Amino acid sequence: MIHVNKKIAEKETIPAVLQQKIIAAIKSLKFGSVNIIVQDGQIIQIEKLEKERFK
Image 1 (cartoon, rainbow, N blue to C red):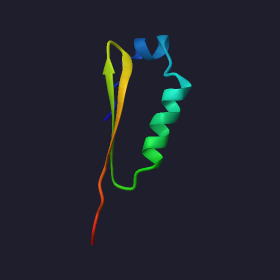
Image 2: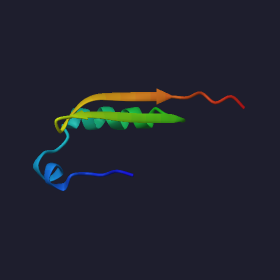
Image 3: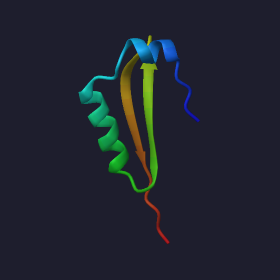
């Protein structure tokens, strides 16, 4: 579930380069997660955890 502070969302937009990095991280995953670390309302880190599944 995503919670967004509407006042912050209305004031500032995510820079295009960060949007592209987040989308690329999501698209490159088959199984895993993407974590976006925010400090003082700014994205400071993007983490990608990829899992390999063996059947």
